[in-house]
Amino acid sequence: MKTSDSSNSHVAKKWQMRIFDEGLARHFEEQCRVSPVAARLLTLRGLKTPEDCNHFLENKMSNLRDPELLPGCAAAADALWDSVSAKEKIVVYGDYDADGMTSTAILVSCLEKLGADVKYFVPNRLDDGYGLGHDALEKLAAQGASMVVTVDCGIASVDHAQTAKRLGLKLVITDHHQMGDQLPEAVALVHPRLPGHDYPFGDLCGAGVAFKVAWRLCQLASGENDSPKVAPHLREYLFQALALAAIGTVADVVSLVDENRTLVAHGLHCLKQKPPVGLSNLMEITKLDSKSSLSSEDIGFTLAPRLNAAGRLGQARLGVELLLTKDPERGRELAAHIHKLNTDRDSIDRSIYRSASDQIKNTFDAENDSAFVLADRSWHAGVIGIVAGRLAEKHHRPTILIAMDPAGLKPGTGSARTISGVDLYQTLSRCSGYLETFGGHKAAAGLRISEDRLEEFREAFLEEVAQALSKSDRIPELEIDSEVSFSELNLSTLEQMERLAPFGQGNPRPILCTRGVELVEPPKRMGAGERHLSVNLQHRQAKLRAVAFGKGEWAENLAEAGRSIDVAFRPVVNEFRGFRKVELHLLDWRISAAS
Image (cartoon, rainbow, N blue to C red):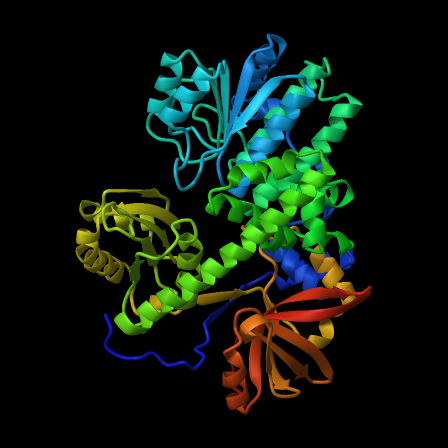
């Protein structure tokens, strides 16, 4: 709780330099003909031979395993193909986040291609909640549905599967989430980690799983029961489905290794070459259409947030419609609407962030308190998770935001985000006596709580976290791949580094550092609200521009430093009006030890 004001001065993270095999790096440099920087990064990816490096860098589409190998995929495709052939009414039951929307669109568009009588249902985040719902199944059965196929949900819905059975609904479940002790009863269960199977890659997201089911359906529709070949018109569909699967994979923050890395790399190419109509309109609005190529960051920072905004504000169905529409005019309308929803979401996000930051400043001791539990009656339940994540990252503390009922009559809805060292699910389990309900996993969770239990819960949660974290644990670490000089960061080296892409969870964009850097001129704030930082840096004879997003306050700290600094950054190629140059995305800085 509040005992003192924390300082506004910059406190550097704990820098941890990764160790690499220097001899192996030199071997890769010679045999693979890459720069010293790229060679070091390849060793840090766990590659052992030049052949491994070439396989990794080529990243061929043949790395995707045949869909029949995915547990339950063949049985699910057979059941769906039977329903298509019998002209039964099929409903694809999705989810309201970007992974759920893309999963829904993949399977609906596939079934439409095959001539199925298919519709989709996407829960409203604010009214229906996550996953299968008893009421929704009742309505779908009353509307004449024969088959319900879930995407990105359902693997833990044991009771709901019984409801479907009672209603006479055939149920196929495709999912990738955590399974319970008991599996639901269904015609088929598709899951990369299904018990009794040994599928070699368990990190497919919902869209990746849906893509495999669609791929198998296309094989069946092509009459290729024993062959991976697909008819030409269905192959064209699969390329668009691959683009959607790439969006879902990046948006769901699953590891970008193995199949996911291949799926995203080729999906990005498909997204650039021939995106679905609605996505093409959204890419035009966001200026992605003018880029020579697309990256995973374009999905993560531009496309996925807009789809997620529709879900967070209760309009996920429009997000699915955007992905499915073939009408250019309707695509433009939906793209403009969803773009505005994201602007609205961003405005709500900033308002909640300011309010929550004020609570931390006025109620907590930001230096010494182990965690933050914040609540307000004016907060939007669909947005608090984003803000909790930002605050957890900024303060390096587990953070819970709770949107209390404005009238105080219903339980509040909370979203929690954490840091390494604190398992949210286990910590909330030990505080569950104060909660109505909770669920989630190690890194993120949701909860419901009555207002009269809030203070007791806050004290209990902070105490539990305090026991798990020492004071030194509250200083975040920054893992750095390699130290470099600015002169090494030329376009050729950056192009080689880009071949390690797509970057994301499990395959992060490399973080480098340079010591003994000088400021060429005073740093400047930039962007809306002067939230960001721009600074020109010099190391020996080489000069580079650096930007730090969301770190405008560093301008004063850097200006006051008055000495040479060490900088940690991600190097990128900035492309503007056909001109390309190396730029640094600044992540941290500290006073140089030698200065």
